[in-house]
Amino acid sequence: MGRRLVACSDLNEWWIPDVAENTCNEIVNGVTAIADAALAVEKEVANAANAIKVAAESALEAAKNAYTEVTRWFEQLGEDIQCVRAPSNPRGSPR
Picture 1 (cartoon, rainbow, N blue to C red):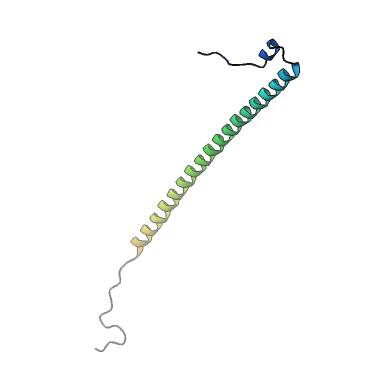
Picture 2: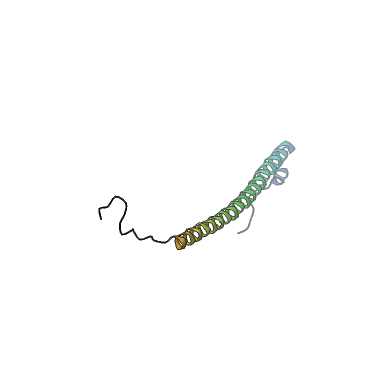
């Protein structure tokens, strides 16, 4: 069940020249390096995505606070505005 198929060192047992085992090891090392690099990139992307998420949440909070402040300012302005009754004899009206 958990049996490996072939390893580079198996090439020695089959009386194949050392160059084949060395080439196999180079290929395995190259594939391993690519896999390691892919994992490192994945980690960096995850970190960048997390930083973007934190920045977006911070921007959202700032926008909510700004909205609240502007709304409060307009509410206070509205409280200070008083309705003025039209004069009983506006200019230009006949008496």
